[in-house]
Length: 448
Ligand SMILES: *Cc1c(COP(=O)(O)O)cnc(C)c1O
Image 1: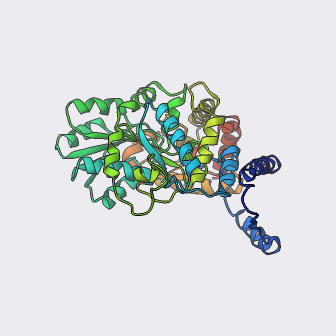
Image 2: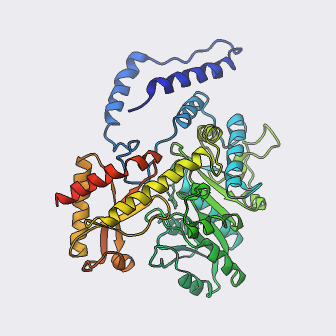
Image 3: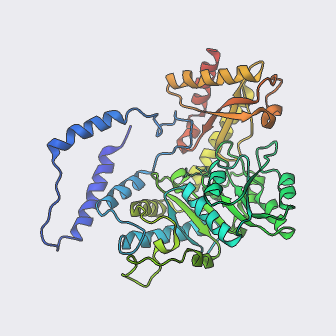
């Protein structure tokens, strides 16, 4: 399943090069007690078998994508130094790499010189963006669609900013009428626009929301933690393209390299169009910044210590697979879109499933055919278990029937919510597995 031999050989070669750079130091060896370590590691390896096989194409469930081998090797290599990207004292080389990575991410959205840095993940990155928004619009409301990530409400609570949800329309996107109505109250500071919702994979109408800035005064934060990299895809639908193409006009953007960017966990990113927001971060730290006059990443971030290894892994991946339209990285994302579109087509033709939305990105949500929504929910839960027994791994999502009632054929609505199956097809190889996945789904559905 894993190409250990080549990966470990590459790591060993890279470690030898790293080691050479410190060979002039007085001899000092920190060894490992092999006898003592092995039983622990063996036990751990057995314990780690208790996971779904996230790396395999038949894992078609939650938003989990294996890191690129080069990211894994780069991350491991960096652990022998264990840099801390809080300050240049703690991670000079990896801080420089982080700045390169952040520039490249900004360039992908059309920004030349954004302020930004990596974070532990999307939640932390969104919190930082909303913290800055709150400082610039004190006491004003944060709005996000009711399909936005659940953490926006909670982050607003932490920041003690009022929060209100905007309804989603029948397509699962932010409803423009409800948004306009709420903006009319005059108390909104920031609208969170999600390009790629976590549950349904839908794209909020950013271009139309930007147009509302002519009538109302508010900031726009784009949460593209999951969807951001799709800006590179040639296969986006016309509507999604229009919204992704307007990203350069917003105030801040969050993207998670640990979602679609082939990175190990611990890699989110926040970007601000206006570098001036750096002044909001100003603080006086008594002990950290002595080694250089250059900007330390810790001076522009809420988190203190952060893994420099995350920056090395992202940098190595970006070198190997540059984020360019028409390139290999973009091509792989297009294959994810193609996989979702193809599975949608197969499900739409079958009598056993109701796929709810033509996928805008690579998330597919589908109900199991039944007489009524209560039965459909039970069937979905049974199918989830039976599929797992057959090594096809899916996810479940509960959706309000008020949102999806017109997408369920002539199914009777007799419950508040309906449980559906959800597949995030975020491994490009899955484009070659859609037929097999579909057949497994049908076989499991046939069994009742
Ligand atoms: C995953 C996700 C988040 C949260 O990011 P974490 O990295 O899990 O903290 C926020 N918003 C969206 C749209 C996401 O998909």
